[in-house]
Image (cartoon, rainbow, N blue to C red; front, side, top):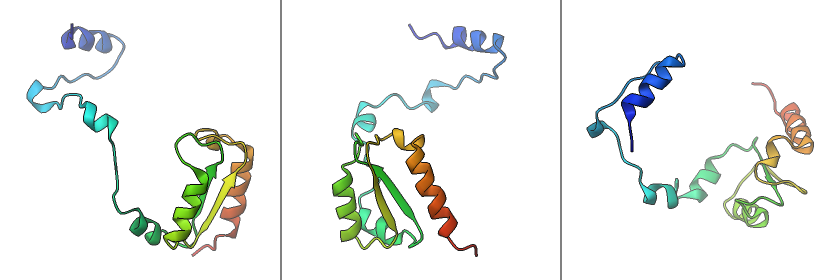
Amino acid sequence: MFRPHYWARELIALGHDVRLLPAQYVKPYSWRLNSSYHPRNDYAADVKAMPSNSLVLVGDKDEAVDSTALLDLLKASGYRGRAEVLAETTHFGIFHDAEALKRMTDFIATVPVP
């Protein structure tokens, strides 16, 4: 059973600032919004709007993106920046991959300071 006042008291005891909202102001969980999220419809326009001094890194073992299809999409959309595929890198692995850090550092060094 959902007991907001109980959890509010527990969180206050831990030092948090709690404010309970009336139910009419809270949107209920929506399975549709969480299962069919589609942020943009015009990817081609988004890609064309990207500056030419930008870098896109994607891992070849990415679970969320097909790296070959992404590179093809970027080329077909007129992307003017650099796009590189990192070998043996997963979707979240790109954040702690030493090769990704090196490529970003090298790229930033080439960007002119305005």
